[in-house]
Image 1 (cartoon, rainbow, N blue to C red):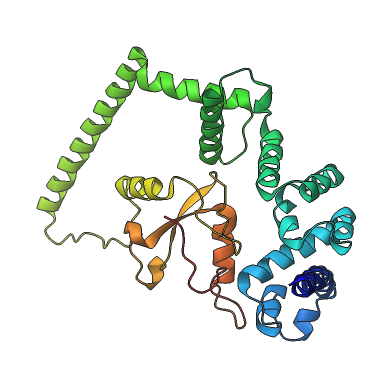
Image 2 (cartoon, rainbow, N blue to C red):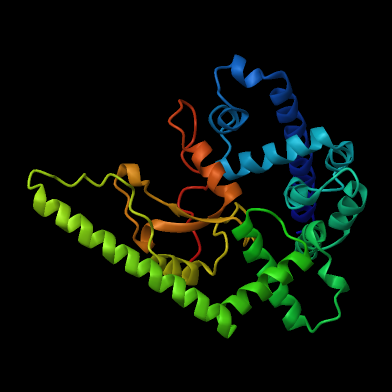
Length: 307
């Protein structure tokens, strides 16, 4: 039994060593553009097709390799096996030159869950440090959620005071009596104008029997009801799940992505829509390009979005 355990330990050490070496080599291959010399359009397609690695594993290795080329501290931590490639992949999004040593040391000495929480905390710090607010925990969660929603709407990160102002403005617009009355007046005027235009158009058609309506070629938008169904199902959060089974935590910059593209007959039914953040939606489109050697998806066969 002890010999079997020792053998497993040796294999584990060899695995981490080989993994760190692979990260280093992939970084050098991309730097020298060797994959193009071998006929591959990207390092990703080279890693999947030539090396035979699964798409999620290839994605993880390349992401870490690129960050390791940028930050020597990360490269050293991986080569000395202080940090596994999998653990490194969980911190690359928040890793900078300023926090590299601190965050790497934290990830090396804490659990994966604690590391994810620290990365989330650092991401929050880039916009506003909610931790300094003296408010109940449940109010803090509501503020964070509001900041994420407002950032998605405004297409940029917002500071706390900006978020609070926008939330209060929206509340007053909905409930303050004078504003409600003004909004109702404008809505009535708009409805009256549309009715007038419709009557004019009908009269025009009557005087010109040869007139034919233009064919509608615009893409049919996703209805609000369908978006509500998808948001409830996906909990308004990116549904991408990595190879280790961890779902993306991003609740900003969300899109209703068509599993089967509209250009290929895909519908706007909820079953054909999935919630993706901008990063993963862009990645899906990039990896779905009809280029020889390119891949069609970033998941392993059989993996599905969580509902």
